[in-house]
Image 1 (cartoon, rainbow, N blue to C red):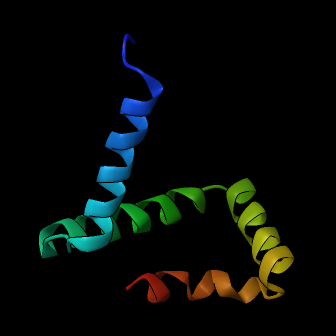
Image 2 (cartoon, rainbow, N blue to C red; image 1 turned 180 degrees about the horizontal axis):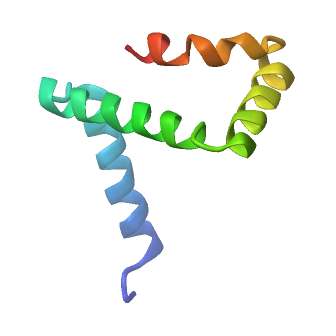
Length: 75
């Protein structure tokens, strides 16, 4: 609040440029992979979650079996 939209946009552009040009540390990369894996496992912890993910894989990629290889793709 109290900040001009142009200032926010400039700050956001600077962060985007920083992310594009600087590598993250191995520790941060591992943390990111762990978060993705945790989200995947959590989303498949219920029958509804599994059904939704299977439907999404079939609908968007034409292959529901991709649910079995997603973690390998992230690794």
